[in-house]
Image 1 (cartoon, rainbow, N blue to C red):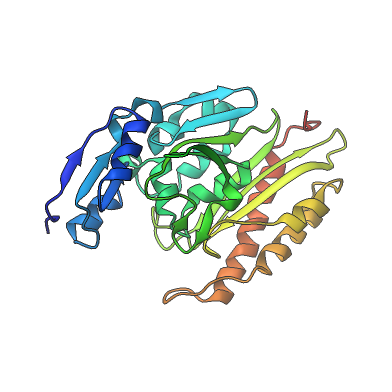
Image 2 (spheres, helix red, strand yellow):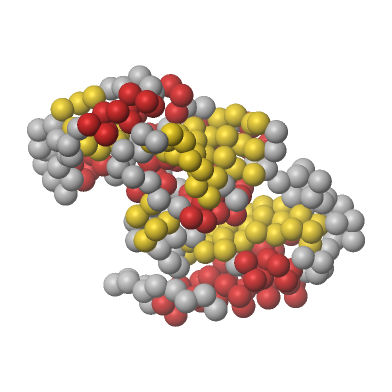
Length: 292
């Protein structure tokens, strides 16, 4: 099928893109196009104007500023996955991208586009929740920062207006020696996760947990953090007893059901995968690593 007629716009700056979105009727931003273009071809989406953000250089790039990894919203998923900086400073992110769709999709897909599409099973909000990310959003009234915890307003509804642009994703960096892991279960390689788990952890010299973050996707409208478990885990030994506590906490989350997977099955997967991810993160920790 072919899309309806539309006018194409190629702004050079974020301000120009925002002005177009604010003044044009029925306009859509184009990032990687992995969702918008199929929807337009099937005429599920019929925008009169398409504003291409790929011509805006300031939305590109992967940089480090102090203890923060800054990822441009238009950074390609494949570029993030292969980034030496990301591999060195935030290894959870490149590992998680190995589960995201297929190489052909990652070659064009963008982190910002996925966050604005906001599929509940998407891996990207999940690992960003574990990383404690903050999202930089620019609109007619200026710039605002949205925590990843506040990004999901409802089912496939991000905390961003139609005339705002997601410009950058800031991820807190964990100290050298931290443990990390991402794992998921999907019906086929490259499919969206039925359930996915991201885990980060550090320990002290006695191998007691100093800090831990665990996030899950596929259970609700957005990523779910195991906050109570994370608080209780600090000071405990990084051992199998704690792994089982995490599994119990994850399997207790009330999970959504759909035509393919029941709530009970998702809860079962959450427990199994949480244990697997945290066990791997513990095994990857360097003894004596601690939050600086």
